[in-house]
Amino acid sequence: MDSRSARKHEAILEAATSVFLDKGYAGTSMDDIAKLAAVSKQTVYKHFSDKEKLFADIVLATTDRLDTTIDLLADLPTGDTDLEANLTRLARRFLTALTDPRVIQLRRLIIANADAFPDLGTEWYERGFQRALATLAATFQRLTDQGLLRIDDTLLAANHFSGLLLWIPVNQAMFTGRAQHTEADLDRYASAGVRVFLAAYR
Image (tube, rainbow, N blue to C red; front, side, top):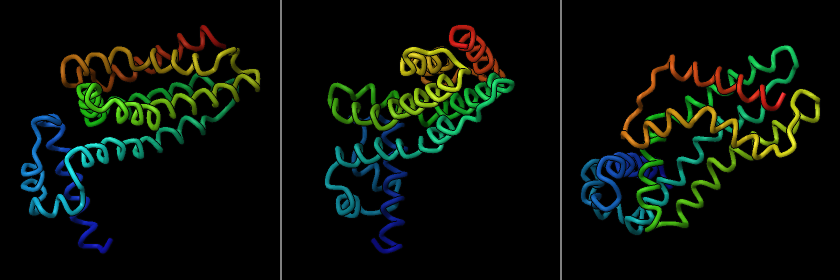
């Protein structure tokens, strides 16, 4: 793909993301996307065969953005004296990534269309959140092997850790349509979640 074509491709993806998030899947037309991307509808179809393919590409592209977060989960520093501090820093970054307004909007969009595109929702979950949980479980296993944690089921513990962090801010955003938390709230959720987690698993 030459540079001009690549720029158009990215412009279409960006425009489509904005329109899908604003109008939903059913309310979005290829005309809307072409207009926002400042290209012809023919150009949109040249890059993407239909609206469903474009929607799928947008949804699955977002899983790549989680790579940085997953790297953080894998690279947690170890050490008994600073375990709580390290876990709290990790928790805060995890919260920041998963409460990003666009991530929340996309999550709502995928759930709203889960009946129509169940395979797409499954793939997004597997390539995104499930992969993050598996990485976190592997990190907890390493900490358990080093004697810093006591965990029998590390994947269940990874779900507990995530739930302690995300239950309040994500549910509030999912039901109200926008973030209800402040940065101070996220700090509190991170530190409190880690304290509860360590009380159960240290």
